[in-house]
Structure formats: structure tokens, C-alpha cells
Image (cartoon, rainbow, N blue to C red; front, side, top):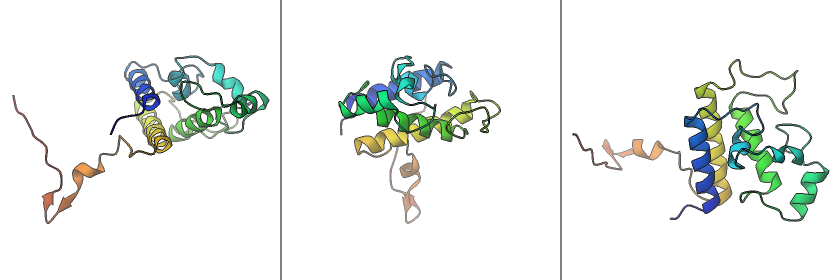
Length: 153
């Protein structure tokens, strides 16, 4: 199975952002979608509220014209961001009144957000979640189903 190009590019960008401390749920150019879109924040004009999946006039025009941004439609981008924010512990849409995590850039929160986003990105492609490691713990008759070659140096 080959990984679709848009998924591969999104995963690389999100992985690098996470490990380079360049992922910030409260910044439109450094959040999940901001990173997927090369740290541009122009996507925020597709909706009136950060974390909403409701397209505004501009977003609807782009959606109806079939526009894609790094392979993703406006609705897909808004859904990605909503999933990311909620998995990071935010109540969406973002506002001063809605609760948010104490430390929005905590690595555990960000990992939860990325895990949820990757699951969704894989669903969009119709493939199994690339972060699902549950298979390595499957067993039959007390023996593991999958074997790994362990090399000790």
C-alpha cells in the first residue's frame, strides 16, 4: 500500500512541528491546519470562528469551486482543526468564555491532538490509522500474532 501524497506531506509537517516545538493550538499559523498549510494562516478566513466547522461566505465559495489547499477542501481543513482543538482539551469554537487547557502546548495535549488528527486524515484516505499500534499486542493461544526481529548491539 502506498501512502497518498497529501497524507504523507501532512504527516511529515505535523511530525516536524511537534518535535521542533512549533505546534500551538491557539495560533492559526502554528496549529494543525496552519502547519499542514505551510504555516500560513489564510485558512482562518474560511470560517468566522476558530474551531468551527461552519463555512462562512468565503469558505463556501472555495468549497463550491472545488478548491483544495495542499490537497484538502475547506470543510476538511475546518474538521481537522476542530478535531485537533478538542483532542487538545479545548471547547470549540475558541472564545474567552470557553474552557481551555492550562498549558495548551503541553506535549501530552499536543500528542492527543495529533493522534486524533492522524486518525481522521487516515479516514479521509480510506486507510487504516498509521498510528494504531494495537496490532503488535494481539495474540493467539498465548503467542503473539506478529513477530519482530530484535537486534541487540
